[in-house]
Image (cartoon, rainbow, N blue to C red):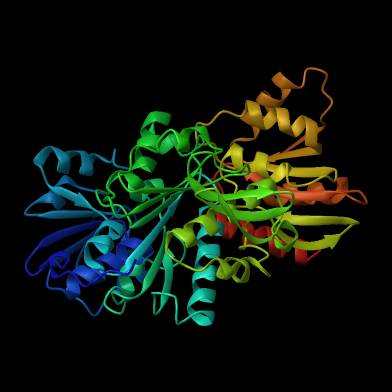
Length: 472
């Protein structure tokens, strides 16, 4: 499945007048890429110049113009192309006006796919993207190291929405390499190119504060497979109704994953504690479910997805086991922090939607002291409330969303069986948990809301939680 170099993919950027909106990791990466290829680059960010010192230093060796402290319409004058960073909403007046003027919009992921001649795996979904991307990377690395004579790839690159934007390394990535990209809906909503192997894990309500409607959110995710060719592969979740409904959007080959054996497609599944790959009714065993170190039913789905995606890329079945064994998870995703007060404390700061908190709660049989809250994304909390009433011994709410969640729980829990404590901040919620915890409990930070009311991102929130727990 390796790709031959295609010079038609490589665009001449010399003299192109490009405006990069957003000076975080993606913006800095694409600004460097363009400027080094002769484009005339302007970087625009709403933050004042003093807050962007790190980004400006990272680009100080290049002739880049800066517009800071807002998004004035004057920034569009003479511009041929706009590169939009993932965190920048397309409803921004500057972007709306750019569309009206017919200025082309793109982003670092689109440019990367247009530039690279390597085989690319793209992975997206409402939940599980980073875990699955990491697992696919591990399987691919194991394949390259252990089966070099039969694996068609020389080197594996993992990036995108996870870690470093790979546009940084695009010149080093060769046609015989394999790229594993995590892609968010924010990146996908602008893209008109799909990866060669596209894995869509699930689609549940998320980021409706950004996309506006569930329909718009689904359409953004569907772009992952919508532009595939007949030689490409779409990897879809048979157990997720929304994802499965998109199976006709790709004209490529279909490979699937799910708990039960597939009826009409090739794919991965579980039977009597063993993971299998079924191809034309022939079952090939992969490994035992007991070899998976990750907690939770949702992580079993992630493992099935990772194996299906690796197989779609032509990696040997034996590498799946090697990549999955010993993997205990990614930081901030059901991450065990420590035992204290007779309880196990877990950091699931990545849970920025109620559905993710539900999956976390369902991963434990022990009594749960749940810390939930943060900033709401205009998502429904009724299902969260129902599961919390069943699974949680004590609910501690914090941040901007605390009152909205409390109301959803109160409406559902008419007998007021679930004790609820409300705290202004996460730190105060942690202190409250110290006084509530009992022997045998699980104390779980799985907020269901974003971190932006208190923290820079979910990683900073999780790191603070971890530090406070370790300092007990």
